[in-house]
Length: 121
Image 1 (cartoon, rainbow, N blue to C red):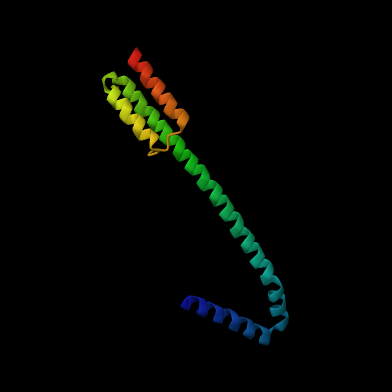
Image 2 (image 1 turned 90 degrees about the vertical axis):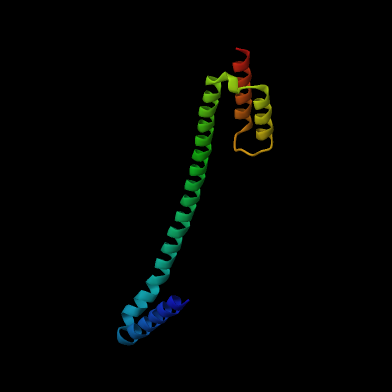
């Protein structure tokens, strides 16, 4: 709050001194300052919009990376078929059905199909 008061006092006193010494230049400055404020506001709005889009893209990339990591986990499970027991599949099913992960339903179906196929082979 102290900085705000300090800089506003400097701004107002600068205009007062400028207007008293060179009033033509002060009038030009008064005419240009709103345009500068408009340009700054537009720049801020565009930056906020692009930042939001960037955050959404990074969130989607993180979701895809999580699924790729889960595929790697699935590959490890298939490599060791003794891990894939009925009790493990039941625990996995209950864990995924409670919504504790970000895995999509299509990926969940693929996981179960692959697990069942590895048990049958």
